[in-house]
Image (cartoon, rainbow, N blue to C red):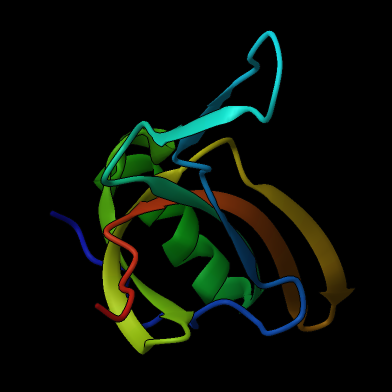
Length: 124
């Protein structure tokens, strides 16, 4: 599996956040409280990320995205930060990234992405 290039920074703190998929399904009853049950034992989470790249890093990111992970369709190992600290997890793009030019001389890029991650580490 491809790995996030070491030449690229990890996501910036601003804009970083994740939302686990709800594994519980709830069923309304004719009377009384809803019935709830766990539908999945392993779920994914959506990870919102924001990267700040210089021109060289932007070129490396575009190459990685297109050539190594098939325009975002393929899984890759990505450093993920949550309550368990920093761990490497499988990730893929949930949708196409968005790039904004934020500086011209030298060129600076802000790239916004939404990743789908699996195997989110949690304490047992």
